[in-house]
Image 1 (cartoon, rainbow, N blue to C red):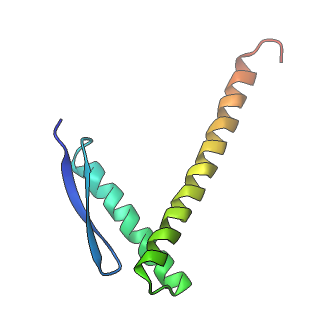
Image 2 (image 1 turned 90 degrees about the vertical axis):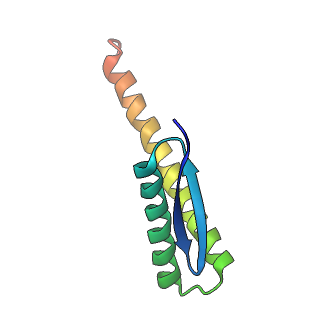
Length: 86
């Protein structure tokens, strides 16, 4: 599958995001990033594009770490359920 692109705005800047996963996926990612950066800019009253971008990145990284921890916890529950010795 060939890469498809979508644009996203963070503050006043426009960026292009590309992926081989299809246009709907790219648009979903672009929308998620745009919305999160807008929320962060408003909540933290940030003006600097760099500050908005870095804070958005940190927010997504925290969310990823939480999701990975939850994934690991659920995997351990499955292992425990499938272990006849538990």
